[in-house]
Image (cartoon, rainbow, N blue to C red; front, side):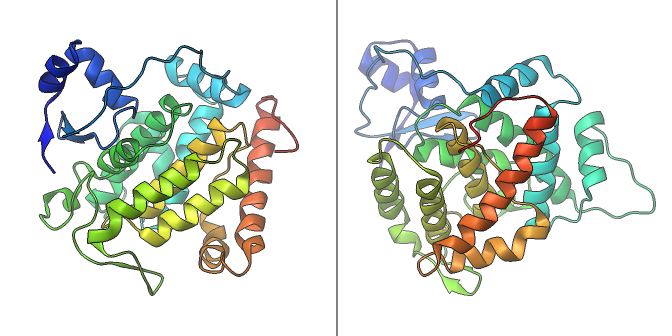
Length: 300
């Protein structure tokens, strides 16, 4: 497939380049993705229609996250989300940084070393994950798209050693077959088709439940569209979609890892395993909301 620049589509659609870039960043142009700092738009992309209705109101949690993100407030739910989700999601994937080191990097933007050897990738991916959470908050109410998913991956992996390997695409689907938990995943040549089918099926659900979000997550991980980083991208998507559907979100902690992985592998036979793990994580997050006095739907 051929890809074109923002300038070329701006001329084609008779609009400003800034407007086209905004459409790309908002995930409104199917298949558009960032290559470095340049948006690439696929041939045949259709111009998004301007919405005639206002966005749905943000939940109290999302409103607070946006407020604290904008003001860079310390000690609130935004900071707790940044540190706890980044530490746990990265640690599940092998990062050796401790929770305290993650907190220190977030709060001071520096690294404290005391007779400790750290992997550079662990540090880079920690900072990148902070940026992914910001992106997730900014796009929380937007429709989930391939472009946004690829942007999350590109943000997570930029500057890592993987970004210097030709066989690993940053912000692009995998080039080589891979496995997860000993299970075969979708072959590279089928990823685009299956991701588009998964998104189409998901978007056909008008009012999404927690089970709908979990169903999407399981299939996303079974496709395993990227060479690496699928788990972290998948968990960011789950959090975003909970925010969008006004469902209390959750953080899968490292001590729940085995239960979480078991739930993923057993979803087709026993949906309750993954659901119960996520509900337990949701209960913990509700305690955070109670502490920070953020109202939420106690039935969600």
